[in-house]
Image (cartoon, rainbow, N blue to C red; front, side):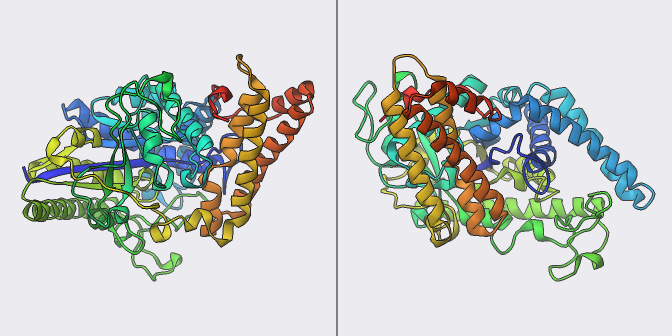
Length: 513
């Protein structure tokens, strides 16, 4: 065996249900669902049916998992898929070849959805057990290093509990939002029963050949460390050792980087060029400087040939990387490639076909393919302990995207939200659950999502991001004020006027104050 390869995919969209359509809101969700999640599940199901196991590690954030199970969203995406097919029919007179291709794709997506997804995403993910390791994470995708430790612990507890509620199992591994890390967070992970998490390669100075223990441990049945959370059901599985696994940028960036990667090849479908009458995408990339109206028509056959070439290239890259690591360390090593799931099918139209080709070809090239869980079960893939620095996978590999000058107002807003929820829960705590405090905690978690600062810093739908952050924050402040004044009847009426949140089982009593 030349070494071990792990593919890790991170599936996340902000909470958008009941928040409108294009250019923001539910359209984001439905596009990713139709073009990435449906074809990815189909690929994994077919490979699993051949007896293949431990194919990849898949993170589905709690807020996305909630949307994939939400009845409103299920009805919405079903309608969206049918509309996709109708748009293909409407384009038949002008673009017959493209219309036929899109009709077949929409028909396949409808069949996939109606056969496997009508009861939500959770049954789909449960059915892939054995082929996929599911990662968990904090509810609503907050940037953990900037949170009050009590709120951070609560967000993780809600997220892990939600994963167990949907899939029947407590995740052992997490992809922390934005790979955000601050020293000491590993203690909170250990107390919550987390055994491994992903970091970006620069956090390990590029030394990603092995999984590495981080910080101290929490003995089974031992005392929760200072800053630690109450474990789910009060149980700390294992010996409390937490390992980090680093994303190998040398391999990952071969597929997609800030400047290059396979999806930019001239033969692949161009994501940004639309036939505006139908909303379909008729062109191939053609060239980086070719204006949309001059791009060549998309050719599925040409793209399929390029998929095969790029799959061969990637297998060669992985093999060469593992050979070099084995020579350097004197033993088989590990390489981890990690991406947003939405790259495969949504941003990169041919991504699912490339993924299937790679997962078939790597074992034939002498590379062991497994999950993070599978890699950690091999003692030969465990390296020396490490002290991680403050880090993320964002620009600069630090915290600037979520704490920079462009978002100082949001950082201040998040501080006030946390103060408000901690104060209200501290004053109103009782042995019995309080649905008003639960609603307050859920809105606070939504206000603290990392997505809002990311959108503002990157200049993507800035107005939408600020509006959403302030909408949830204002709800927290208004509800907290009513509760502080003892006006519970008015508080209940206020909460009933909000659209349904993603969880509904948030228990504010679990928030340490």
